Each structure stands twice: as structure tokens, then as C-alpha cells.
Length: 172
Ligand code: NI
Image (cartoon, rainbow, N blue to C red; front, side, top):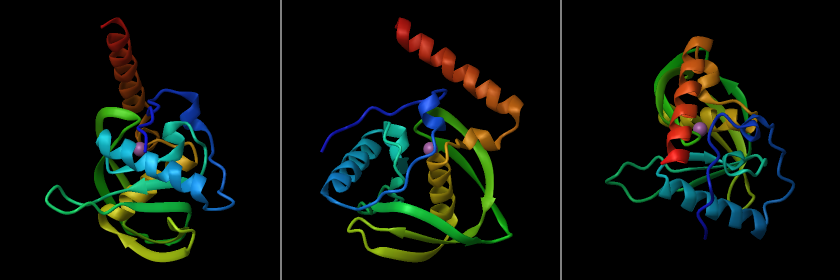
């Protein structure tokens, strides 16, 4: 396995719409393994392939709490077929928007279909953290970041902070 560099905003590569996966093969599983290791190393709870520069519709996730054993999950070509009218608000962060956290409102529950690590079709009702996290990651597949759900004022402020942090890193 390998730790891959994570792309941070603002970067045009994060705005790309990811392509569906044709086949879940060993090459794709290697990518998912590397993404998982990269996510654990960051550390984070979810990562989309586009965040490591691979515009494919692939997501890895682990929502286990610190005192629980790891529970890695893999979502290939995820699709939401229905979602609740009811919304839920969570404070979100993103490995591509480092150190920034803001509340985002999303449908509280959804029905999702996807292919798993072995390429088997799965169908599942999701809610809570899983619903929020999966919708956040699925946004990445369409070139959308959580800051795109905020007001332009807030988003511009966050982008300015990110650019300032990047400059500080470059001159450090
Ligand atoms: Ni993210």
C-alpha cells in the first residue's frame, strides 16, 4: 500500500466530474487500498478518488470511533435513488479543505446503491453520520466541495485562509 498526496482547494482538479468505473478489478482494489491508507494517515473518515487526483467514482470511508476496531467501507459508482425531505445539520470538514469546519445541511436519510470492494452490487438505507459523510464524498465525484454549500462570503473567506496557509507553508 502507499500513501498518496491529497489535493487541497483551491485546485481545478477538485472541480472535475469523476467517471464511472467499468469494472472492479485488482487495479481498482489497489487504488482503494492506497486511498484507505492515505485516509487513515491523514487522518480522516472519508476520501474520494478525485482528492488523490484519480477522477473515478470511488469512495473509501471508516466511521468507527476511536475505541472501536477499524471498519473500512468502499463505495464504487454510488447512486442515491431517494432521499428524505427532512434535513440534518452536521459540522463538516474535508481533507482537501484542511483545518476548516462549517455546518452543512443535507437530507437526513437516503437510499443508496453502489458496488462494494468485490464488485458486488449493494443497496442500503443510510442515515446519521453515514448519510452525511457519503453525500459529502459523492459531492466530490461531481466536483463539489462542502464549502460550495456555504454563502459566497464564507466560502471566499475560507479560500483566502487556505491560500494564506499554503503561502506560509511554501516559505517555511
Ligand atoms: Ni471532502
